[in-house]
Structure formats: structure tokens, C-alpha cells
Length: 271
Image 1 (cartoon, rainbow, N blue to C red):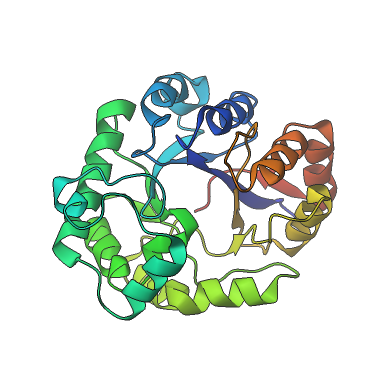
Image 2: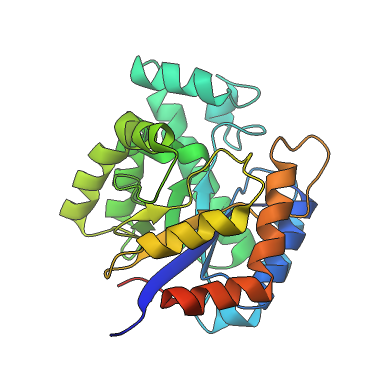
């Protein structure tokens, strides 16, 4: 029996130097297959230079994508800054989205600005698109993301409509029901899915990250899955700094390699 395939994407690159350092450490060791970047954050520009210099990037083994961000920092586009000097919180964005009160035209310009900033500093178009805190699947935002995918041949979009794995059932259900399931149907029609299934959802409080990953590995289906993670060295003011350090320590360890082998899972890109 052939090994099942797991793609691992580290989210939040560019958020702060500690996150950048942790993700770069894993990228250089070949522990990731993808990185998603927050290009409106202060650490993106300096981090981008180091990220594109990782040898696995030039070989195509490490793919770089845009982590569409609307809940941290300030907007890049003038159009959205006229509405928001700072990005809203996730609860605020959820309410505005489901009430259909978001500034559609300004958000379209913001997404374009984030694409352009990625291209400017990474020297390439993003291979995939997803959303910080899964905002890319929310009402109206989902439409903008699908339009962007339709206009960009080859761009893959993270599918949040099938979140599998044990535990954290409510959070997985919430991701699917706030827009993930509808996004999935549209991505299937466009054939732009970055992943068939998604693992990695937890509350960031669990002290034993290895146990979580072992259970996720056991749940990976034959068609493969994407594990999204948030490793980093931690920084003041980062609400999940402790979780980032735990994830980094485990993913950088020999134990992680042993767990992949024991589960019959290999790292790679999904068909």
C-alpha cells in the first residue's frame, strides 16, 4: 500500500519576526510543503527575502501563497483605509459579512493590493490563496476570492468545507458552516481546490501538540489532506505565542519524522 500524502502549510508568515524565524527554520529542514503570508504586516518585507532564498522554493518543493488578512494590522489599499484605519476583529468581520454590510468595492481593491504586494516582494505570483482565520470563505469575501481564482490560472484556494480529524467538533462545524461548505461547492466546480480535506483545528490550548498530530495523521484519507499550522518562536502581544512554540518544537523534532513513518504518511503536494 502506498503512503498517504499530507501537505503541511505554515500560516501567518510576516506577522512578526518570531513567526518568520520559526517558519524559516522548518522550511529549511523540509518540514513544510507550503507557507502562507500576511503581506500587510510589518515583518513581511524583510521575511520575504529570506523565504524566497530557501532552496526548496526554487525547486518547487515549497510553495508560497497569500494569507488574505482582514483582521490584523492596517489595510494596504487606500480604498479600504477610507472605511477602516485598522482591520476589524474577527467577531466584527463575521457580523458585517453575514449581515452583508461589508464594503465590497474596497475589499476587492484590498485583495488586489495584497496580491500585488506579495508579487512585489516574493518575485512571483502566489501559488495558493487562503484566509487568516478563514476569512476567505465568509459571505461576499468568498465571492471576491472565487473571482480572483477565476482570473488567475493555476491559483489554488484552501478548501475549508471538509474539516476532518478527531475532537474540537464545534470549531470544525463552525468553520464549515460560516462559509466553508459553500466555498467547497464552488471550488469543485472551478477545479481550484488546494486540498480535498483539512486537518489542524484545535483551541491552541492543548499542551500535547504531538498527540493531536498523531490523531490527525491517523485520520488522513487515501486521497490525502492538508494540515495547517501556526509555528513560531513567540512574541510579546501574540495571543497564541505558547502554542506557536509548541508547534515549532514538535514539527522540528525527530519525533515528528518518526510519527509520519509510523502512520504511513509522507509529506508532499496534493494532486
